[in-house]
Amino acid sequence: MMRTRTAQICIDHEALRHNFQRVKSLAGDSKIIAVIKANAYGHGVQAAADAFSQADAFALATAGEAIALRQSGVTKPLVVLQGCFDIEELKILSELSIQTVVHQPHQIALLEQCPELKLKLEVWLKIDTGMHRLGMPLAMVEVAYQRLRACTSVGHIRLMSHLANADEPDHAKNREQLSALGRMHEKLNLETSMANSAALVALPESRLQWVRPGIMLYGSSPLLAKTAADLDLKAAMNFDSKLIAVQQLQQGDEIGYGSTWQCRQAMRTGIVAAGYADGYPRHAPSGTPVWINNTLCPLLGRVSMDSLCVDLRGVAAEVGDRVVLWGKELSVDVVAEHAGTISYELLCHAGSGFVSSTL
Ligand SMILES: Cc1ncc(COP(=O)(O)O)c(C=O)c1O
Image (cartoon, rainbow, N blue to C red):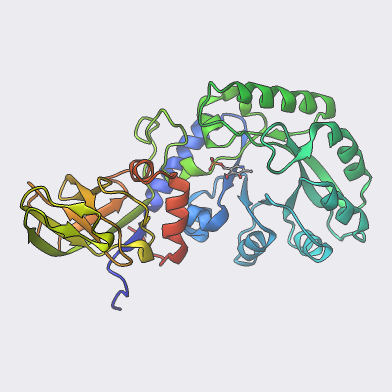
């Protein structure tokens, strides 16, 4: 069948499996919740569930994501990170034996109003230890716990929190958050989870009973100061395309929409069939590297919907040559840094129109 787009996303299952083994070797005795929300950060949730089959549980963002995964035949424990917002959802989660996070009093009230469920819900009580995103304020945690214990619809209860600055392991806030969670863990004597990828790698004291890595499973570095190669992680998403035109431009010629880039000398340029419709970031500036024939060629001018222009000075490249936007040959972390964003955004976005294909 003819492909509709020249640019393509190819998922390397072997890289996913390799990265999971890296997680496993770091996790030690801690159990692993592989975070596969948002279509596994754009990699395809089924492919990820297969590749991480040794995980102890999977985390999804929403009840809808978890229900779809369960109905597709995945039997592993599933955790809904955003929790439930009505009683119908709670009932379905119970029927499908899906665990839910509780992060606000409204969600406890729903559980209290819920008629007795055939299967009690396993619950993660999420604590706000300082990120101020989702979580029960520290002062309310003990009352929240007692209310959950009194709910006939609630079974096993565990604790969870999330670090705001784990990508900078020396950040003082990490210690504050970890000691706040540690105090609650001791007081309530419940299994507890804190570590995302960055904490799993760089803050061993955060590993506790359950770790929750996401980004490192996909081969991107979770730490600002380390590359994926430093951490022996392999890129799982390969985003590539082809050179579809080569131009010989003259000094003074301007390139692309808005004429934002002007040639200072006569030069050879190439047009790559990849643009923001394919998930390449439109805001990537001139100079962002694109891999062609073992050379990193700088992007020139604005990214268009279906194409972008690269500098081919000194590069032996012809129409039809393979181009890597990111993947094994060029880390998504490097592209993200040039584009002023994070790998998470690029992976989720490029993978959102995901056409399943494997290497
Ligand atoms: C609650 C929670 N836990 C764990 C993770 C995984 O984090 P990371 O992808 O940085 O490892 C996320 C990701 O956003 C999250 O929201």
